[in-house]
Image (cartoon, rainbow, N blue to C red):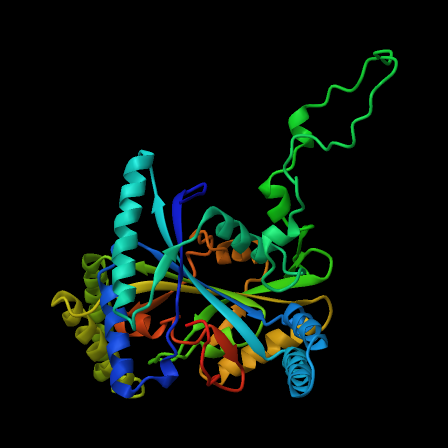
Length: 415
């Protein structure tokens, strides 16, 4: 359980299902199960998808070292394997994807009451995911939470770096010590500095924090460390109808962190809003008919019909409305690489009638909102999704190991 300024958070890591390799009936079953999970929600959820380019440098050196002790065909095979891994890493097209779910609790309450409520919500989410192709959800330990935040803020480091590797032994010791030597004569005591001892002790915050954090409003990005910059986008326009996988270009663009906020709307509030909207649309349609203006008549009739259908479905308990915010933080090296990457993303999504916009003059708030803390500072930017569209957001529909050219086919020796 993680404590933030707004309350408490429970961060889960979930597995994924390779949706494209399922049969049509299996895909429908997974979508239906995920829809039932969303329909049962009474609290907000944040999905956090972290995609990093695969770093195989350690594995390549390990294979080469092992090949030195082999002979004959085995040595040749090990050498070719090391070359293949190096070429695959050089192509920068293989990505590792991790998916997290953040369950929030905001407001007052005793710690034991908050813990009990978060456990109830965790059980609800875990049970719903288990029906989506036997997906598992597990709580992150303190060490894993630290590593998650570390990889979010230290984008100039190696991909998916481990805090345990970055922290030297005795990192948080009270005092740095050296070899002890006997003192023949006691020194003359003199007045020394009176700085607090706690100031010389390092903690996890010193390790997790990046080298620096500079907001550059004119360039419309944030500089993290010395060589990496991040630009955050938010979703503004979507097609009228969506299906599972419509956000895949966003996940496949490389070094990117995506946050999806789902906020269930109150049914009574939505029904009242739809009733008012229907009245306005009907009035406009009648006025156009009276004036003999048939230019927008078909559009108004279709809008009235859709609003009535949605209102009736919600009233009968067959549909729900969610307020959805989608944020994406793209990282690249300092220079024109970030602009090229952002332009490619906008063009690729634009081909699917999906439009994103840079969080101009709000990069700091947007970047903080992407973090897996379920603290959305851009909550005023959202889109209305019904249950079917929210189900199509299904962020667990791709393999953990992704390739821009397709799906890896093989046997996982670990599973």
